Image (cartoon, rainbow, N blue to C red; front, side, top):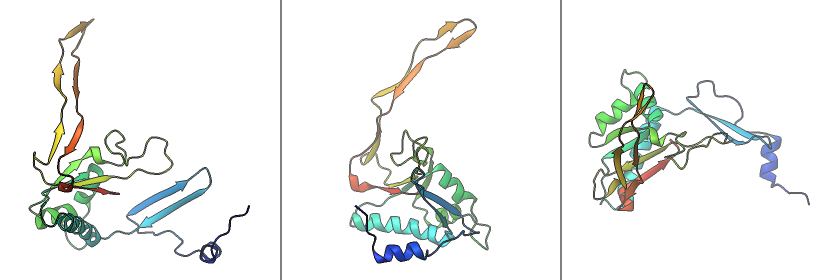
Length: 195
């Protein structure tokens, strides 16, 4: 049985729109399945104002969602994004985007968190596994730093076993287990996917 496509799909297939390479792109994304040849590469030109607007929108969304009850004070960013914001200068100035955000949002602490990177498969559920055909997504977390609302559960504290002597080496086995973050009030934290 043949699959029928709408007129709009056939129009875009016959006469593609928005096709080409953006030479001054500052972001490139690729999505699709290489096995069937369906791959799309997207070129993005993201301005400094758009980055600042995104942070403002996240703060506003959390404020509106919680009806002004939760006021976040920490924004955890993937370490690669944190570094990129620190190195990227606002056009026409010598101020980085990260410095601008810190200066204009003094109540928010910005943290670099490698556990949130798009490649951190052990800690980021949106990360890409090795060999995946689609890239992973970095995750940010906006939250109120308060032990009553968010904590890291440690079911077994750090334990150092006795030293073991083997030839000319000394090995000291250690172990620890961390269960992960526990958010007691779900509205006190917001996850931002796709950074």
